[in-house]
Length: 275
Image (cartoon, rainbow, N blue to C red):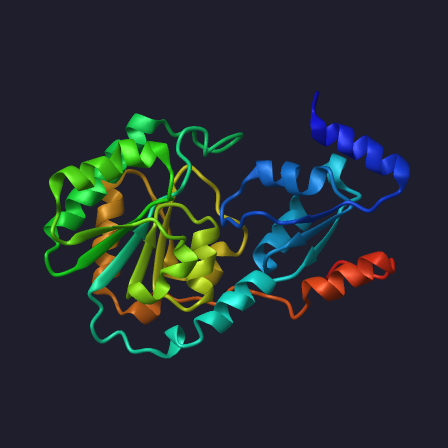
């Protein structure tokens, strides 16, 4: 039994409004988000403008009655927390944080590429070997705490080799920005938006078979780049480390609305989508 269909049926009969807060941001087409975040709801509250536009322009017929609103409260909270980052000088530029995606097998689903554990380990190993050879930099390998796959594969590899310029970190990325001068990610999910929103020089890859959101290239510029394989990724990392960090900063479109006002407008039946 699909519990979501049961909820949809039960709530519809009762007249209760169904509201979804977007659970994850991304910068590439992801049809699963259209299903999980719009299909079963009357209202979806996007985390920022790029997602809001994606949801509105790509709703399928089953989601046509779902109104899309925007409340960037989470990213604005991070901006306040890290208000000093955008103003600090990058004089040292020595510490680079690398944050791979937190899910492996099955992460790229529906029309996205399916990634297996062994192939992803091979990709990460190539990057780690490159990092270990860059003695002019210190790298922080940020993995997800409790991730059995990471602990038994790439983290175990790093630990066994005891690389003197690679440190391991398992705290949430949103707690680590002051520890680094630049951030690298291998998929533009929520961590990418977190890093960009607080003003970190950021480079994120996306597999070149994936399709970025409309306007993503214009908004993120050099911060968002396609890669075909590990050598391609390493080439782009080398360029990222050579370039002026200001070239890898961007501004995410965000509305002034907040969650409390939006929820109040939903209760009062007075909310409308932005045109």
